[in-house]
Image (cartoon, rainbow over the protein chains, first blue to last red):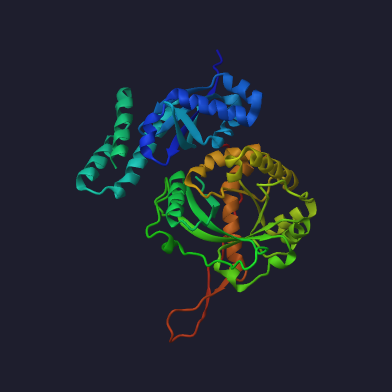
Length: 167
Length: 269
């Protein structure tokens, strides 16, 4: 058997106001990406996009989004991503941009990267903490980032998210 | 892992927003940014501005994503030239780390490529380039180590501009075969900035190959900065500076020789 190869683009949705990240949802992102591809590459792009593209994962706390494209045309579709300036979700327009942080071949490698990346973000956050309690909380979160508890990884991800919200 | 740079952040008077842009750039993983002061001499009485030093801009520079060093902030001057008299080498140019010229006519483009002492030649992104880039001046510029700049913010803002940007970029890349091109932002708003990987991929739309596109945001920018250094020093070998102590006369201080410019490692993104 030959499997169909895919590329997973791990993107960070950057917004000016972090509270609007809560509005993120899968459908809004899918439609924004599709509209951008149609605008950049026309009907040809739309046809390419309609095969095997999906939004694999959305984390509304950290703003991390995983997009899945076929390997044959992921570069074509990726080149449309910089032209996204806003997302419609839950009836509101959110000004944002996509920043690709990793391109992976499997969900597993993306997950490994994401854990490492989340940990880095926590370390970056540490100097910005104001009170001692916040610092302790971030330190505890940094130590808890690992793939040891592989099966309950989703829980870990959510943990990181809530930390980021606090500061 | 290579070092990404963005050599075009428009200097806006709003200091708060400029700080915000620099913070966003650090978050996206750019380790060097250049604040761009644009001068248009055809408008009367426009003075060459005095650049702000990095410490004046913000007290504490943000740490670059994935690195432990703070972001480096340089100054850049862009002269919009419509007549030959607009670009005169003067002592005011010496305050800037990087010098760029934006020629509006073919004659000036030729002069900029062959004779002007600049680091960057900007290519029109908001209008159709009124002339063709001929092969001989472009080759001359490549030989002299001058780089061509394509900025992408206009393309993000407006779809008509996007057509012009892509058309002009493809025109240029065809002539220079993907060599000596840098991709910069030209942002005035933090939400217009894009990450280095996205921009490297965007280079594919402009007709660059994968390796050239990655070099356009990393190694080529480094070459630009080194070229700017050689302009200020004597070919980058000897650099004169005044010592702060009054008792000693100023002496020549040999600066370490600038290392040879490394070519991009061509690897898939």
